[in-house]
Length: 334
Ligand code: NDP
Image (cartoon, rainbow, N blue to C red; front, side, top):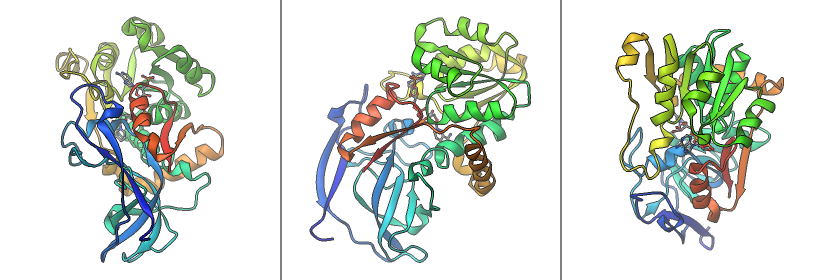
């Protein structure tokens, strides 16, 4: 591998405002050699996640991303050479941190061998973190019952589009919140949502109240802030809020704000508001994957992917995701 170049994208500076292309730089380094217990992998697909931006703020469920290091990110990769028991050349693996680079050396404990799935991109979307987050967050935290009203924000994104479809499979009345008329139309006409609210149109609370005349039983929150505040006021007694993420607070927001109504509305309406991290449920992933596979096979669950070509386009792809360019799971093919 000595002649092969490893293209790497560094985060050169942590953004204080909005993330821009100036915060990244591409360099060419050497391909690293694995030590005992490690494998050298070649990145095939880099996962683009809203959380990539949150990691720049500081430590979350993982360490913060630091300036002048390879930008962190998970992905699907192929083992090139291995000194790790259980992994051999040609294996397809998921790693939560291959980073934004062609090649990475990864300890075996951070690699998961993946089954042969066609197309391979489904390993990052419906059968990856996005699908499992939607599944566990909705069914184990939100606990929707047939006939209830479920609202999901960032509904046209990777997690949200799956949440809404699973809620439909479970017999719920489903409302998606997304940015723009086209995305809202797509949710109702293609994905089977009962209604969609365009939060960029202003008056989100009014539109949501009209779409959910019987109130909200489960709110799957991907965004926090004002949308969470609007949903809180419309929750029914004993409703459940599954706190999945807070995109509205990730990129260039000077100080996190909202929602008002906490804890007052939680007390009066006897609400349960619970955060979760998908990794906590990994011991139950086989059952979740079996359900997801059967729903995909029967056509009940549509998989939407947004694949961008070229490692050099990864910064633009993340900036665009934060601005709402994507429909479904965004990733970069390396
Ligand atoms: P998505 O594919 O959902 O893309 C992000 C979407 O967020 C954009 O397309 C955009 O769509 C929307 N958005 C951006 N800014 C705002 C805003 N200010 N208000 C409302 N919507 C906004 O990304 P991910 O699937 O990566 O992330 C979805 C959520 O899931 C995130 O909160 C993430 O942190 C969380 N997550 C949590 C996990 C867990 O274990 N708890 C695991 C994985 C993800 P639009 O055009 O509609 O604005």
